[in-house]
Length: 224
Image (cartoon, rainbow, N blue to C red; front, side, top):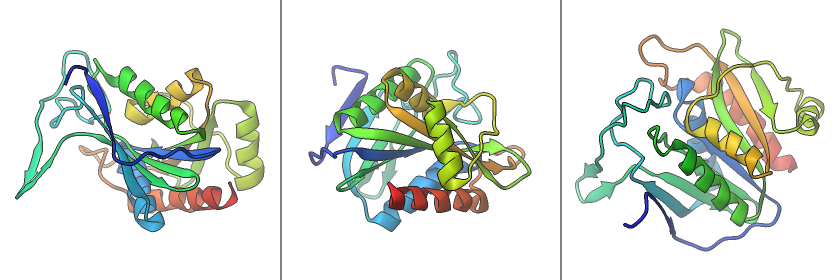
């Protein structure tokens, strides 16, 4: 291992005008729940995995997405009988047009580089649009959006009746992928589902809020 980040391609794929949906553990675990559901629903195939020495097994920050330069986390692997699992970012493909990205929060030293590598990989596989999934703090159960252009925001309003509402920080893996997409000139949309954080455990899965977002994602996949 000569680099801090390395990619294992299990199967070569190259989509045409494809869409990537990205999610990771975060507020209410909305992103993770969304990706897990879509992988199962679409029967997408694991085609690539990204590993990095910047992906800790145990985080020193709580929640995990609040990376701090002095709290890098602990390195390690997970073992279950004869199975060994490293911290990773997985890419699942449903040809001819969909890549589902199951993200993982990096420590402060590597968070930007990993986001850039993820977007570069998606771009190399001819992804034309990235959809980010996440939660935002709200007592109201609704989905809002942000996007890399006003044109995309108007599209979300007209097609799906989704408004821009949340304004504020977007921490962690998914937020940096959103930013890296803009820098690499790939159109990107972030969908935020309103969720009330559980005291002491903001990443506790909220199935109800995730379902609101999943229902919209299914429509977007169908009409794209």
